[in-house]
Image (cartoon, rainbow, N blue to C red; front, side, top):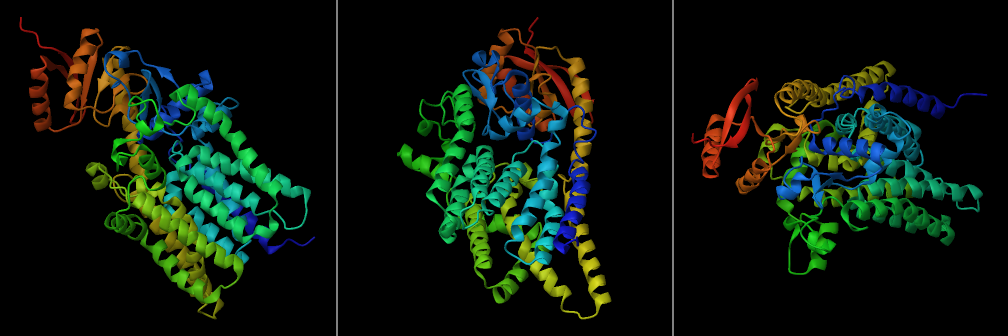
Length: 543
């Protein structure tokens, strides 16, 4: 039996997938202390581990009853004084269930594995739309896409798993044949199952996913039956049932979730974050929260588009745009049109949805490049544009008739794209993977020093450094001057209180002055590392 060229290409992709699994696991190897640079990762890992051990997503924190719910790390929420996830529960439940059968350490490798699987299923989908060489080249670009490469290494963030399950689910739905076929029911079950998994991970993405599914259903209506749609909805509902259960158990409402202000009202409408308020109508506020939570701000959209679509990955952007023009000229069948329209509409919506968000943390904006939240939210944009970049590269190579020139040009382009990706992923900015790995090592060392200097029941206050000390110590991850009264309540309850300072001398002088007003002071200064100091917070002694 002869080996088909498509099978040979797929074999190459599988081999590359194995290699990239280890590349995508760069940050995992050596991180035995399970420290993370993103507060979201710290929270997700903590609650996944808690679910593996206790089958719930709520952890009691009695001090919050004393201190008005401020004893928590960032990316955590508080409900009934308990620490709860400040996110959707889907990823935590999926990873937690798998973690009950494997060690927690292996759970960290699940995201790199899913990142590889996504590329292989993406290839299979593209084979239905483009000729095999374009599908193959697009998948090679998928592996080395800088955004995908980077966030596949951040194993406790949900964006990679969300997109992977959606891609897998879409692949199975596209397997449905027009004729009556028993396998169609299997494809519907598998497709709806994986798409539902993606939705429980990032439920706020359901608008564009629903739009994609409706659009495909309209275009390929001849393949559909009412039984398929009923089965699809049934499977989705069944997948969401555990989420409804754990939402109610964790947040007191089946439809609630961790992004809400859980202690600010009884209804979800009342709990919508204040930054999304636009009128006196709670229902209108909630609709805004679903469709365009950050409003529609064209200037902000253009700025974010420039910085995080064009400027950061300019080579991929230019190749995709030029390839798009070639696509419009060369590709005219139905499947090509469907892919183009879907890609364009999804990209425009995501740019409007997330691009209107004006990031408030100026320090993060100044220091971070690829490690900014815009990039992980724009992942579908980068992925959908890959076939257009592949079309441009294929067109450019085929401008030459000489085979040797073609090979040299192909190698040059491959090395250039790979080199530019490696630069932005491993070398550029303060948030590259090498820097992150160094930071994780520093966090581990600092953690050991501070743990040795503090009591087991101590609370450590800091700005941004909570991820270093939690969960070994209780923390107050963010604070404001209004919280000082709660600090005194903790002192009155005989809770050892510490401040981990990374700020300037001027800032600390101001902090001294503010604390003095509340009869508190910083004592027992201990240098931890460089300009970082640990202080004990006590009442001022007038003896």
